[in-house]
Image 1 (cartoon, rainbow, N blue to C red):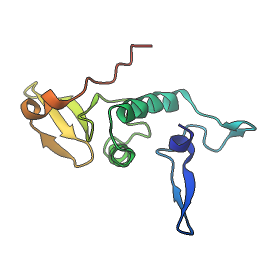
Image 2: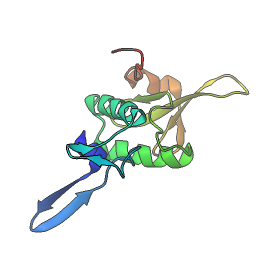
Image 3: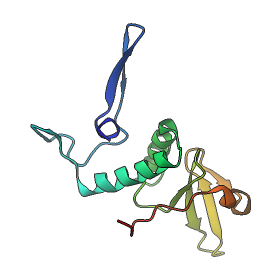
Length: 132
């Protein structure tokens, strides 16, 4: 989780590289002697990221979904505000079209509608915010 929140560095073949945090935390400019301070919204986002990782979604797909969703939804915490689903590889947004009241699934990273009857059987259950 520290890597997701703070980023990390590594060295390979004599070259140093850095991976940025997945998002800017609520209190990223403040730090205690023991480490970074995070807010409640950060905890919610962490829970969603952990669930996606548990279902096999690669961190690069999660990073791309966060970047795309943050821009599209104009939200610094896009994962915990939406009904998101995964097939273990991609992240989908579940939405209801207001005019026709039909269910829509959108591939968040590619910004494309997908066909719910085809994709839905392969999806894991959504993130349950009511469980402990």
